[in-house]
Every structure is written in C-alpha cells, then in structure tokens.
Image (cartoon, rainbow over all chains, first blue to last red; front, side, top):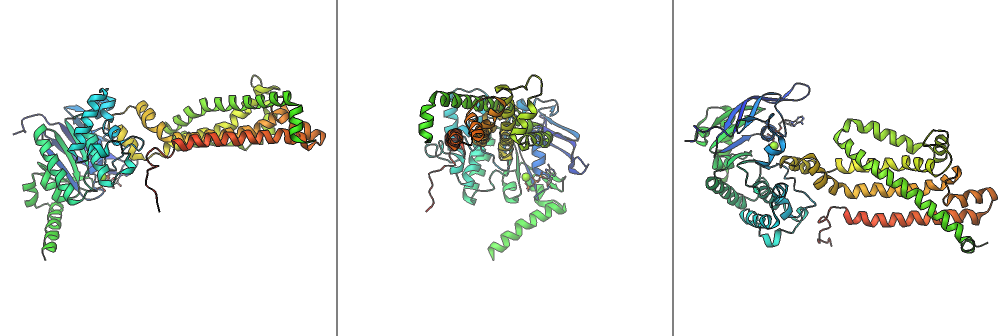
Length: 255
Length: 220
Ligand SMILES: Nc1ncnc2c1ncn2[C@@H]1O[C@H](COP(=O)(O)OP(=O)(O)OP(=O)(O)O)[C@@H](O)[C@H]1O
Ligand SMILES: [Mg+2]
C-alpha cells in the first residue's frame, strides 16, 4: 500500500571502499518505504553497521548514491540530516558525564527546547522504555546495567520525535523477557506514530517478529530482500542457513 | 645562621623574590595554557601533525634549562637578559605537558561517545564544548599541574639571566659557599611546588574520573 509513496531512503548501487580499494559493502540497492520496519540481518562483519552509517552520513559512499527524503546525503547538511534521524549506535555511547535525563535530552537541548518541555519528554520516554524516571533520571551511565544503558540509548534516539530511526542491535544486551516487551513496544510505537525504522540485528527471530521486510547481508552484499514470509521460503543459501539455524535451536530445545 | 632567622631578617628581599618567582611561573604557565590547549585540540582534528608537534615540544623539554636560557639571550625580540627571556623559556617547557595531555585526554575518549554525539547531529563545536573538553578536563588539568611544578623548579635557574626569583638566593649561596643561602631559595621553591601540586591535584580529582564513576558502590 505504501509502494506508491516516495521512499524515505534509497540506496542506488552503493559501494564503500577502503583506501586500498577493498570494498566493505558493494552493489547495494534498496529502498526504505515510509512507515515500514526494514530489518538488516546478517552475520557479524557482513556490513550492517556500515550500511546504517551511510544513511546518516557518518560515511559517504565511494560509489553510487544514498538519498534521504529524495536528496543525496552528499547534498544534505550533516547536522540537519542527523537531527532528523534517531540513531541508536551499537556501542550505545552514552555520555558518561551526563545523567540519564540529560543524555535522553541531548537532541532536544541542541534544538533549544525549554526545560519544562524537556523534563516532560524525558519522563515520557523513560516510562516508554520501562525505566522508572524517579529512580533512573538522575543516575549516571556508570550506575546502570548493560540492558538499562541500551534502553536509555533507545530513549535518547526517540527524544526529538524523528520520523526516521536507525537502530543498531538495540536490544542485544537484554534478557529475553524485557527484550520481547521492548520489541512489542517498538512495533506498537511504529504502528501508532508511523515512524520509519531501519533495524539491525543478527537474531533471526527478532528480525522475523519486527520486519515488514528483511534485507539479508552477506560479505558486504545484499543477498536477499523481501517480506518475512518470503524469507522463510527463500531458496537463497544464506537465507536458508539462517532459517535452518532457527529451526535447529527450536528442535534442540524440544528434545 | 638559622634558615628561619635569615628569612626573617631579609624578609623584604625574600618577599620580592618569591613574588618574582610566582610571577614568572604564573605568566609562563598562563601563556602555555592559552597556546597549548587550543594547539592540543587542533591536533585531535589533524592527528597526522601530532608526531611532529609533540616531537618538537619534546625537544624543547630535553634541552637543559641553563642551556636554553643561554640560547635565548642572543635572539632578537624574545632574547636579552631579564624576565622576558626567562618567560619565553618557561613557556617552552610548559607547552609539552599541556599540549600532550590535551591531545591524549581527548583522543582517549571512548570513540562510541564521539560517534553518538556526531550521529545525533552535534556540530564539531558542540561536540568539543559539551563532550570532549568536559570529559578530558581532568587529564588536561593533570598536564597543567605537571607544567606548573616543572615551571617552579626551572624558574630558579632564571636568576642566572637576571630574571630574579628565588634562584637569586641559590646562586648567591653557591657563589659564597653558604648553605643557608642555598636553602633560603630552595626550600621556599620546593614548598611552592608542593602547594601548587596539592591544590591542582585536588581540582583534578574533583573533575576526573567523570562524575558518577565515583559511584556510591563500595567494594568490601
Ligand atoms: N574503518 C574500517 N576500516 C577497515 N575495515 C572496516 C572498517 N569499518 C568496518 N570494517 C570492516 O567492514 C566489515 C563490515 O563491518 P560492519 O561494522 O558493517 O559489520 P556488521 O555487519 O555491523 O557486523 P556486527 O554484526 O559484528 O556488528 C567488517 O569486516 C569490518 O571489519
Ligand atoms: Mg555492527
């Protein structure tokens, strides 16, 4: 139904090469449609993080073109572009000298929101990621567990209500129960607010649960792109390997 | 003759020399700060220049202080006999620890933190003022502390080129083979160094590690 609307992000035969010419990713072409959750799936080192960074201009393509809202990232002012895109980085990267509340409010601060509005927003977001504001707002990152830090990272990316969100393995450090809760919450949020999400994971189960479409990466190239339904039935060897791994863990657990 | 007696009896000269000493160290460390911190920040933006700049600063530091004072005397504008030459030499000594610590302090910040900042749309200036300088502040202060302590010591030699300071007592004592005189210069200089070290050290602990890492968790 969304196919007719212009893509939010578009990759046109994109390659990123190291100085010596070796490609990290190459021949990448895909669209991110408005309001969808595109899951980037792939083994470690397959180029998922690199692809995300090409979207918010932390990297510029060596070949081809990446466009956001119809404009090439080369032409975007990097600061303007990034303020429109929420970004949860794989290593979280909370500011250690800021409290949780100040960390969450970074982009609103950059955007010049007043204190009251920031405080309300912080409370709202901490509730959303299931951290009690009363007990967490004034803590420093060093006083949080790994999973709590990740949740603050997600809250921070959502703070200024960006239309596009890039999430790089945001739930990696969470226990399965909290993880499922946050996956549900994220999916509901996306449906409610019509956000566009690009979500990186190497967990097939998570990918299948969240995705409108899955983009499967293998050694810096796009091996498969399609719906979860198509993914489960794909003849692509890498896709089959992932599906098989999923089934194997299920069988082992049932024995 | 007892050291305290001597200082009391010559307290006018003692106070003058102490003030001269503090002036030499204060002005030179101040200049080194104004030059060194921005230079250190600049190096983090252009890291390929860091080996040559740090190398040069390092060379100044290895020149024996008396020789450096001597080299500077014949130079136009910055040379000559007196406080100006001494300050130039002291600045050259103070630069290395300040540049190096500014550079290392910023380079040492978790790359994920900087990437998060840039990824959220901070400009280079915002990243510097909101993230990098606050996080590197303790390390930069440590550099200032080292520079100050070195400066207090080296400034005693400034007396050799007529810049005054507590070195005047020391050189006079050496010439007259008078230990009390030597101590009258050396002990106060050492005390100044200790006090500066203590005060700047306290300031440093206040800022580093970054707040919150001093968590209320106590190991048993
Ligand atoms: N700056 C760099 N210089 C050289 N190689 C790099 C650089 N950045 C990434 N790579 C390489 O590019 C490949 C893709 O990296 P990328 O971070 O995109 O992987 P990923 O799919 O996100 O992996 P993971 O699931 O482990 O996070 C890896 O082999 C990595 O070693
Ligand atoms: Mg990655």
